[in-house]
Amino acid sequence: MWLPGSQHVGLPAKNRFMKILLVHPTDSAADGPWAEDKWSLAVDLGWSGRNFYERQTERLGYRVVSIYDLLEHQQHRRRMREILDAGLGQLVDSESVDWWEVFSVQPYQRLEQIMLLSVLAEQIPDHAELVATRPHSALPALTLLLNREIRSFSAESRTNRQGSLGRYLKAASILRLPQLAEIALDKWDTDYRLRRHVSRAPTKSSEPAFLLPSSYVNVSRAQAAYAQMLPHRRFLLVVTRRNGRLQKLPGNVEVRSLASYASRPSRALAREQADLLATWRKMQSGPFTTNPVVGVANNLHALDGFPSFLQRGLGIREAWRQVFARETIAGVLSGDEYNPFTRLPILLARSRKLRTVFCDHGALNMSFGIRGTCSDTYLARGDMARDYLVEWCGLSPDKVVVGGPRDCSDLAPTSGGERDWIVFYSEAYELSLGRTEVLYEEVLPELCSLARQTNRRVVVKLHPFESHRMRKALVDNVLSGEQRSLVDLREGPMTADLFERAWFSVTVESSVAVECAAKEVPCFLLSWFDASWYDYGKQYAKFSAACPLASPEAIRGIPQLLEQFHVTETTRRGLQTSISPEDLESVLAGRRPS
Image (cartoon, one colour):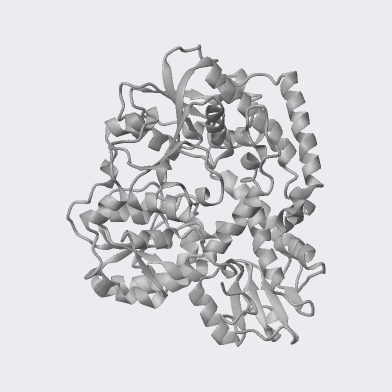
């Protein structure tokens, strides 16, 4: 661990006067009225990448760090587990559902932020002067942790507030009316009090079915891929929202809306809700809040959403109970334990002694490292996923079975052809307070230089959460006219040519690295910009799915690295090993595959 005041940072001793600057994610330590002062330390409340902090430290003459670098990843994981475990075992309902466990994912980001601030507060001397570049959501928490006010150089302007509103309105303007309607219903009709009136109630069925609960199309796609392998079995896909539906389904998979199982709240449900809320109020003034992070979160009203969440959640629980009452459910094949409303049917199945199996819809899943698991068995698509579940998340090896769905045509190697693209898979880094402009300034000129030397083009593949207009403006801003002529921006779904024409690809830690490796496209990780403590990038590198780069300058050596870095058949098998129908049948039946 390297913290402010430790030997790694090389700060003044605690008995000397310290001036600490807290840098808002939209500001820079080097630019602004604060740049005239001499600081002992600048702590970025966002993320700019380790390479950037090294350059700023050298330029400014004092240490610049990110709050995301305050803890080693293992310590980060341990502390978050302790926080999420703090309220377990107290809000258990009549179905053995622990509502703190279900709710805690809602304020998770706020709890994580307060946890990091508590680590920072432990290192700040009482006599240190602490100033922020401008107000930030972190400051009230740090004020409570330090028991003193923190002044700012500037106040948040009315223009900025209007800008935030404008961004929301602009985001709404690009959505179609059905999309806006779905978003509104997901937000204000979570427990289906409205939608149940327009959803036809399904007739009771006596034919056994494995339940597939889903809220997202990617989850449904993963579940359907396994279901297709067992055509003699009946599977019931129950979606909590329209986004979980698939246009094409295997013949043995039926789809239902959870809204069609919803019913009017009963008096018994109202009494149960009142009892749970009474327990919640006792918890808020009891030992639960002695955890310093939970205590601060409670004082800042970060947990105030629990009563309304419980009301909605109990309504959704009742709808899932009706699924079990009207259908003959043989077990649950889940693709998302993290979502609270698709976690509920797993918990209900467990209380009914039914078989529960989990199949992940992504390459890796960090949530198992900080939250309790609730399924009997976990299907890992390959040795890389199994190793992550066991070694990083701490699952028992007996609970994990290696075996992806048999239909893996999307993971087949690409055919030969002209490799005239350098593909950069971008992401919405702003969602985790990352400074995208810094990354683009570091990466794109280097990629353009390689493209010019080798007569290739740079293709920036945008994530669905990214705005083409905003990214175009950013690319135009960081590149010269000559460089810009070498770059194309791509939005929309993944297409085959992104792999077929790729000389190589680069990304920070996206799971697209696994897709590239499966298609024998070399992928390089921009590891210096990776702020995540999930260690996905390290896991990709461990299983030779991708090659990490330590700095922007390392991009220049990619042509030489390509001579050494090859995706082999052994690598591909480690990423994806198909399960046989016989072994899948054994897993669903509760037997260990032979």
